[in-house]
Image (tube, rainbow, N blue to C red; front, side):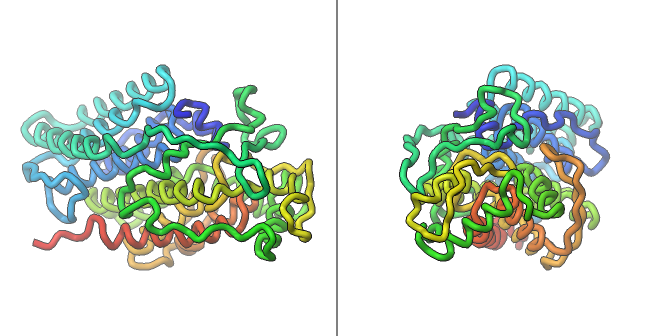
Length: 441
């Protein structure tokens, strides 16, 4: 399941329609430009948000190492250099990002998607090099970027991303099984054969992928969802049944907006948060690269840790649970066989909400990087519900709203979201404490 169908299976089919154009880079914004390019290229290549999280983390860490080899400010992730101090930073950034992006395309999408992604990458690379005067500085910069990319690609060559892991869905109460999309699907699914949902579980091998910052995928493994016969489960059930239904009369207009706003993939949305906040502070390339490397590495680990827990407990999604509420042994859960979620439910188990894990991991990095959680920012959403603008007073507020959105969308129980925040916060805190620390001579 590593083709374009995986995107649909995640309930994020409109990622395939993500804008595949990237704004022309300005002087000194190459780090931001290649971050945006990485998302456009990987989406064009048929990768879903889980796969994209790995690809972009690899690119951002290589960019960090390439710059750091020119001017050692932080501990390297992999590539220790050194590079010529006269090397062009812009050339190093472009070469590192380009080589990693080309290296992560095989194995995902179809031939046409990969060809488009390669062409996009090469266009951006040619344009980047054309802006840099010819000479030794350019040559040295390219060499630094290539070495950083080579180290990253070699290190991730056997990380388990393409491993085959047998997975059999459950059938009894509480067990995940393929589930339908609302009718019509929301957001729309262009392929009529896939629109109904009921798809196989996505990427079960992700539970065994080598983490970027954690010691193991199970380092912070959660204790599991509430038991089906508990009062906590009944509360979760009632809440998502009321607020997450397709035609809910209780979900407010603001809650509906929140569900749509945060439906975008976590790597894209939280990288945009990082770019917005960083741009206001005028940080240089080195600090931009460090922040985006940390944010994306923590998000990638959020998906890995989330998969470890998800496929261990294999807990059913709200749409399955509510339609079969008379089988769970809980007198407080009334079944509704016709219940539909507001938005499409991604095809993987409920607990934890990896969307919540990823957001909390990013928020923890951002709060520590800037020395405070209380940083106000305003951001406009991207596809599939692009153009919604919301404002926040802190990173943790945004992470909580990001988690709440999953209940309002009808795709996760509350416990999956709140425990996801706890898991993501642990991942982010550890990543910031142990990776890319200031260099001490």
